Image: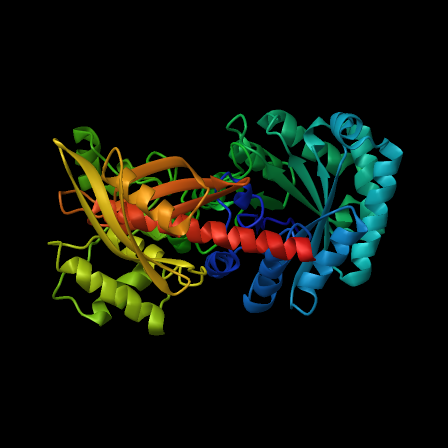
Length: 516
């Protein structure tokens, strides 16, 4: 009896394609934090970035490949010599390196974007796979826009790159155009018409422009694909990618029907989702499958009655199976460091030393103001005090005093530390936040524009922490800033300062790229 491969490899591209979500860019330290969580999750491959694209991405790929253990570490590379060489430069010396090279194969792309003939694209693909294969054994090739490529040409391309040394063949639905039935048929056609396909694993990378990324990936797996490229929370270019947590839980929940499974530690799904959301600032919609706030919430009386009698009546997935605990550890001003660290561990954060001290100090200060500190409060503290520790801080908020009212123009007095020097100034505005922002802008002499300002109450009640997100733009650089505090004006100022520091980081990264 022939052995049937029932294992689906999970290729996570949160740090590459996911980072292409507008406003979702991460610095090197933030990428490392996410990569370590992905390793805990048990993904098979981490696409750590696009090494040639910038010095920051090169350094992220290099550090993740050398500092994070477990998964295969991958860098994206166009079918160009310089890209392949940069990818190898970042990956060289790591334990499980992979180069992932790609070129378009659809006539739409070749004719209108790249001005290449089919013959030239085929020649480049073979040459670059051979070049990558000269550096390492694990080479993946992607036929960009494969779902709109003429099948016979796609078969020819795949066969040629496998002969050149590619061991994984990725079939992307680059613009999210495919339907599940036709995409599944495409994978089946490849298995039936590419003579050497048995030497490679078929992978798929589906975009969500029509809301079908998960469905298309599932159809591909049913028809023989054995690697799925996806992202945490489904983030990514335009409408995003196949959602990792959704496709993984489909295989786990319906293994009876599909007979397929992954090696994912599903209890780490919720912590991974919250981590990526907090770092990128891209909130998860409440009704999102698997990890949304309402995914395990029941309001209907009928549902509640059934759930109390037997959970299987209305829950097909146990909350605990994705790392969502239904029990609550109440934390307050009398809680100690041990209880606080234990709750952090429950939420998926492994924090110690100076980082733990800073987070605990902030927790105690918050507990003095609130009757009860909730999980969301703790996550906000981690985001504010720990995850940003490695972001260079040219600016620091030292003091903020704001006055205003129904009959008085709001004005602010702010002290900001700039390059180690405390500067105090006063200013006015249409409201207290506007007054604070005008004053801070005057101190740091920024030319940035405020594109977006949003406030979210992290928990209920009048003593809730407020979380503020701002988006700033300067010279084409767009950054996200976040801050949280029980005083919404302070949270707003912290978010603005955080964004200004991120702008400084981006400008520094661009200067380094120009030097190179």
